[in-house]
Amino acid sequence: MRVVEILLVEAPHKPGNMAKVLAVIGDLDVTVEGLNAVRRLDEETIWEITIEYDDTLDIEVLIEAINQLPETKMVGKSDRVFNRHKGGKIKTVSKISINSLEILRDVYTPGVARVCEAIKETPSKIKEFTNIQNTVAIVTNGTAILGLGDIGAEAGLPVMEGKAAILAELVDLSGVPILLNTKDSLKIIKTVEAIAPSFGAILLEDIKAPECFEIESELIQRLNKPVFHDDQHGTAIVALAALLSATKKQGVNIKDCVFGQVGLGAAGIGICSLMRDYGVKDVLGTDINPDAMLRLGDLGGQPCSLEELMSKADIVVATTGVKGLIKPEMVKKGQIIMALTNPDPEIEPEVAMKMGAAYATCGKIVNNMLAFPGLFKGTLEAEVTEITHLMRIAAAETLSRLAKDGALVPSALNQEAHHAVAKAVFDAAIRQ
Image 1: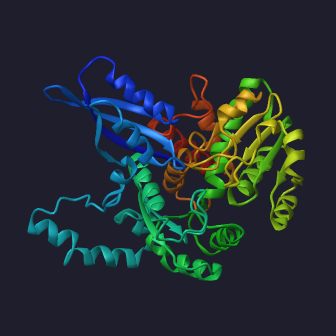
Image 2: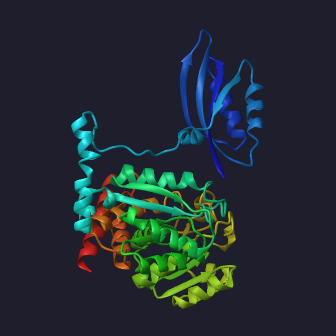
Image 3: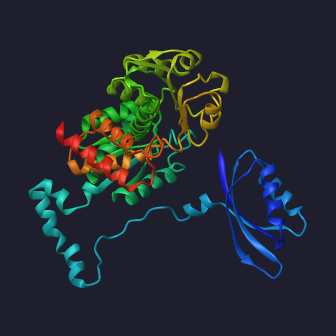
């Protein structure tokens, strides 16, 4: 796993001293992300150096090496990631400034009783007089957190808060993390069904396969509102978008390519399903789980070994959670390779490119955060009860169209892209 830290280094204010510090950092295969002089003393300068390194490195070795330099010493360090998580990343705020008794009586008792009665009389008014149509439940049991696996719902809360923060910042939706301390699929289904009236839509997150398939399918049947497992479909949308861009640059039709999926968990099956929905005929897949291979067969895909897949596929997408699974010598010249496991991919993009891949990228670029904000915004605005494959394809095509300057997909912080996805999803929902 890659770690980002900030070092505070005091060094003499003389030519060449900071170069020596940077040389020591480079010698330990550490990347410098930022360098800033934060304070000048009489004869020294305090430097803030932002570094990124593999967690296999003992950071104390680097600190000792810096301290061995003449008149140079470490005076402090901090972890940027942890700093940004202190106190959590989200909060609930009021849309109305309650600064008078009149306003208080209107928004709470006694005035609120009239609104309650109106909703009782006409239930559809809940969408007009509450925030429900802007509220998304983000539900997890913590059994498949990122590439970390089953670490528990509480340990997964930072991910759920992150998704809520993204929804708020990018499309002005309120995401509410819901942590379920159970691995029983039926209990999860019944719990989500019971709390569903509080939300406009349900986002299922980081629930492991195969339970996630049953949970999503059953909730779609039981609830009269959108249910979406992001690990399956969000990843699939952005993967399809990136592949549409890559194949267009190569001058080939994705529907005529041999597609290979390495890893048939939630994301892998979701990707294969969307590829089939889009019209890709030849879909290969591999997994160490025989049941996952059978599931691929049920979708119309062809199970095979990793070696066969790598030798036959024009396009390879990997979502296994296994760092370094794809060996450099497996790469076929001209392949499109997307190794999407976070934080460490199945093969580093630069390695795949060096071995002859036409395009290679990872989960830091092809990430579901490009899909789910606009998808939920458009779905909720359309007031439909289901997110269909036509809506997912509309989102993917929009993301591909907005990719500029050689990129496969737009920047995750591109506000235009998220609003364009919302509009495309809205239009697709209304048309179907």
